[in-house]
Image (cartoon, rainbow, N blue to C red; front, top):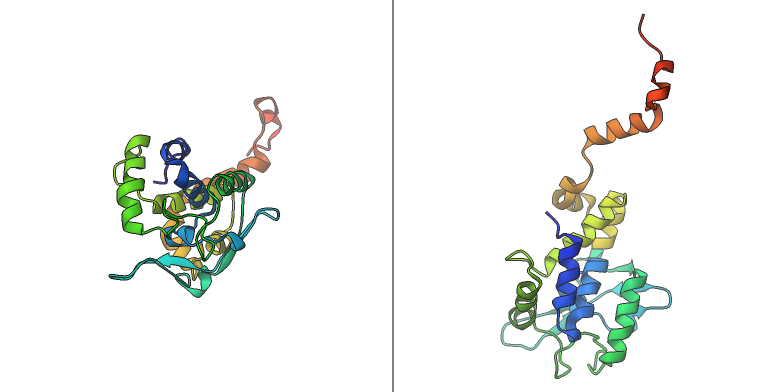
Length: 209
């Protein structure tokens, strides 16, 4: 099951100030961890509330973190930024001005690109513990949370697919089909919304003789 909003809020509150905006961005856009770490300032348009995803931070054996294209061609996308995410990112950029030569907005204390393994060990796991989140909660669960919000608010399969950067709608369904309302429930709601009568009107409905 997706994380509860209260759990996400606790994770945001428990995260160190330097990385709090990364948690908000992941929960508010569904970007993958590498895509989140790869966000550069010139990929953000906070006035138009847009984020361009066209790179990610990856790790190769015995090499420093490096930038690479996203997971698939479908992962190249532009994501609408909610107002709350824009506000948090503005505060982050004011508090932690960009120092990375490639313009990355999330870096370690030395201004270097984030290492997934070190981030998990030193930042994320302590944050999960401090927030009282379920044991084993991963950064990727923020992506699932975002998807669950889109589905809960009636977004189509194709929209969820585009926002998450899935290659096909089938991939989206394979992962999130259980979150869409049950077809039986939708059938009941569709008919009830049209034909449901108040108790006072029930006598006016046609009856079988």
